[in-house]
Image: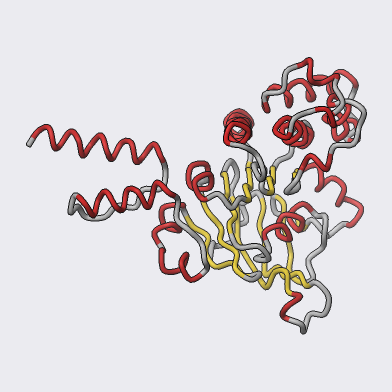
Length: 293
């Protein structure tokens, strides 16, 4: 379990959330979890359906209040002053599992502008935020005048994410942002998230069931299991714990399995490789050694 630090951007201390009666374990959304997330990190969250991933996202965003425990944003308890919870929604932006369901305005521009307008920004600042967010997610300007309901699935997803990005949150939470998209749509979303993180240098919490995306994008990985925090560590350390993953019914990334087979075939000591770039480097190193023999 990660140590809670006073310098973190967002942290949870003994947080529980119960659906219904506390005494009914089947209604337990989260059970006494604690962790600390530092600034400028990309955090992956994995776990089976019902493990508490979406509940955690809503708690961190202030959409729901913990039954027990505290959530801190830059050292301040987000529920200490109930009148300030609206600002938490702006500072911790959340896109839902199907963010296109968040679209409701007449044009894409108006949808992206909704958050900045409600932040009380000037028309000039709103326009700047909208155009910048659209650029981050790869939406062309001609799309901004269209109805969001006329867009493709991937475009809707990017428009919804742009609406959150336009509020310039300190923490961006993405709940299954690539769910239901084809390979091309998924690639566009992931590239948009990476570009946004590189430029804004903020914290991103990325919930996904696709292990390859988690391994490739994230600095640390959190595993939730039946409302508890099973692991919180680097991708290499998390995906090297095959026994824990197997017990929880989770898979390692495909590249990790492929490299494991390769090392076994070559009778080499096994290395844990979780990122495609690292796999390429390892293969090049192996080929170079072969040529020198």
